[in-house]
Amino acid sequence: EWRQLRKIFITKQKKLLGKHVCYYCNKTIFSDVTVDHFLPRSKFPEMALKLDNLRISCRPCNSSKGANLIQPGLKHQNTIISLNLKYT
Image 1 (cartoon, rainbow, N blue to C red):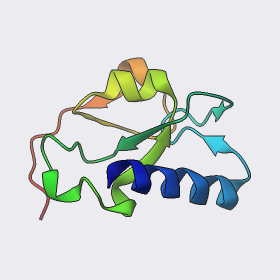
Image 2 (image 1 turned 180 degrees about the vertical axis):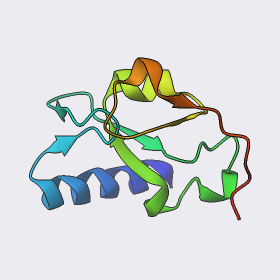
Image 3 (image 1 turned 90 degrees about the vertical axis):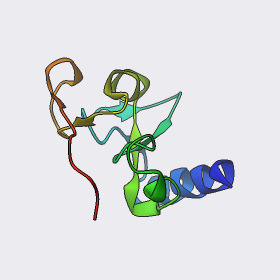
């Protein structure tokens, strides 16, 4: 189910923008496109398969984010936000 959703999301985003752009650092991604769960799966399992919770991201941003939130448009090293809230 996740692989199919991921493929649909990547295709939809490329059609929308004409290219893959990282949600977090705004760089164009030419290879190794990753799909991030904006609200982390570990903390919000009910959001894991929701399209509106997915974001295209580059590997460095996705890897450094982990189970945290990162503000979009900023460099990934210093923008991790502690996530201590529950989605309602």
